[in-house]
Image (cartoon, rainbow over all chains, first blue to last red; front, side, top):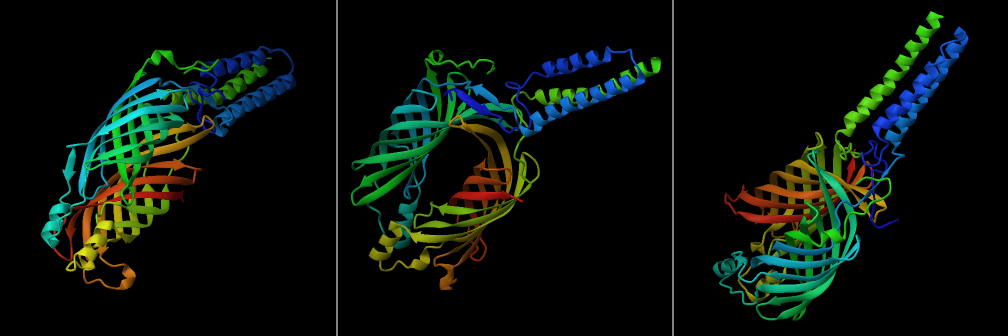
Length: 264
Length: 221
């Protein structure tokens, strides 16, 4: 199947506008059929009765067929992707909640090259969280309750990583059944490094995100990532929740592909 | 000859009426354009799954949860109860404290053992996505808001030591996503946070967070 093709509405009881036979066509088909039978007005009562029977059978069959199409979802739509990404520049804010001593906020920048509708490469993701931390009060608690001072609590300064991005899910959703929102879900896998106050640590990261398309060039990204880094004497991790705006540069170079006979 | 003609005309008109009505209803539906009738409706839902409680600096909780939800319509549901149990592992910080500080007692670290939530569920978004352009996945996104009761104790319940137990109340909020496998079965991802406001048996106001990440399978009964 062509990568830009997108299945929508299989098994759906109601046909979407984009794929179904237009209602007018159906109406005209029905109205074409009726006069053809109705035009035969001469003949015996028996013939008329047979005609009536034939028309009834025809009409009922047509209606049933239409109903079956609607209820059993025999017709399904193939839509071209309305939004396609090309060169993506993003700016996002992030929250890193899992450190016991500090909750970090971060400002992030991303550049992503989208090769196809399915694959992309986040060439660079840089997050800066130095000075953007909030003390949880745990140090004070340790000091007040047990007269203990925590010494080994380095803060995250920034981290940088590069990721492969897989975008297997594309679709649309409705907000309160009134507004259609196009979106895609993506997964990332990559490598990078985290810079703490004390040292750099190599890391790998996995993540999942959702993009909501606002226009051809603007989209909103929500994502969660887990950075697993090697530190002295073990492995630790940083959980990252981000939300950001993306600009799709050179969007005109990757327009929505037209599929013959299918509207977008 | 007039009678058969009239009869024929009458029958034709009668036969045409249902088809026209069907066409009209089709058009009425089509005014929503690409918004389709929801394929998967929910009535009474039971969900069972896994829970992870990561925020306590002294313990990390892994457990199970069970919930029952009544769905009123497409937008609103009541999670009548969501009960869970957590098995807690000591964090490095707690281990260090216990090892290095002789006057620190394990009894000073109450952790969530049982919890119960009752929430309103606001089902904001419903949609479908194509997976690898081959399979359609239906999903919804929802937000929750409600109350929570927690039982916190420093020791596992089977130790029988409830001397330092805490019975607490808090407010609970969060959001989640549901993915349908079939009209009956679905998979849910939840992110919830409880702000503990009051401890009944101690009379204090701890103002602590207890977040939960949950994965569960749900069946519509």
